[in-house]
Image 1 (tube, rainbow, N blue to C red):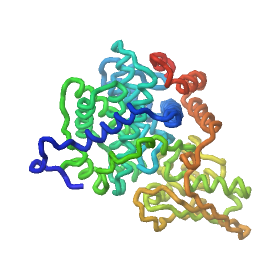
Image 2: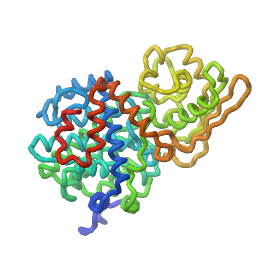
Image 3: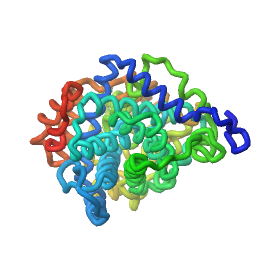
Image 4: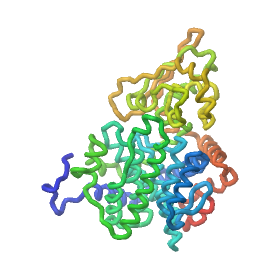
Length: 464
């Protein structure tokens, strides 16, 4: 798609962003199926529980102190207990909490944690509206989440370039303003202004991922806060640039360098990207889940243990290898351990799962575990798709000479290989336990699963 420049922008040329947002709005007016809305509810419950769990981390507790120092009027709550802070501060810390454990939903085709920025932005802006005396319904919230995920995910889906900027943050921030704007029943013109303003503030690169730095979750927070700032400024009358997707210095020139953005509006009106969003069973980088799921299936079937395994060979697409093919070290931070497949393999074999306990300092530095990781060999296959998560292959060679193979077309938790309702609820309760809020689990779960029928969602703030 050719870039728009000052010399070739006719006055009547409609910006792609405006067309895209309008398409999403009109599709919502036309209505979503019950299955689509139920998927949004399921993902909302998962995201909130993971956000409550994330409140327990040292990083989130430190970030809360900083947010309180930022000041501002008390407009929205920090999830899982904490003070009421400004909309920007609440969006920042809640989004950080959702991502900090690497347990949040992900849209694999777009390589975007679409719920992670969108959900805090929609709910925080909704709470700010109720604090001003406006009534917000649960249906508005679900509409906003569906719309925000659609925008964030499709920005990734039409992209052909490999990750350079941290797409969950950049695409997520743009999806967040659309989701919050649609939830608030804003006009297309005002949402388009917020979208353009937010484009000037989106940020986040893959460097923290490369180093395993905890800045990844901060980048999620930066963009949630930027979305709230953009909403404030648009509400105050500021107009953002309009050709922010296809322009000379637009998203598909500077942030993503290869793709087909003209396809953003070419969609089947009955299908929504939220239907293609996965729930993560393990608190680790999603790129590890295909192989870990395949390995777990083999272990359950054949009953081997770490002591009886001679070697584990894992073949993955190039993106997965780049994200999680790193080698472990005794001094790696927790963020790197969550993204290190070779380290996670012995943890899974020992525990039958990956949990927050997999990242205790005495385990990361355990010389026996680190030495055993030399038996894990991760390599890139010939998949030409630079954004592919799957398929993956796991080959386990046992000391008795047997070779066991698992081909993994889809990761556990994906729409093609979903968690059962029981597994989803178990994850929800575990996350609420980790966050120290298990006593509120039933109330929150029941409320969210009936939210589409709630006329005034004020009670949700008290539960959270």
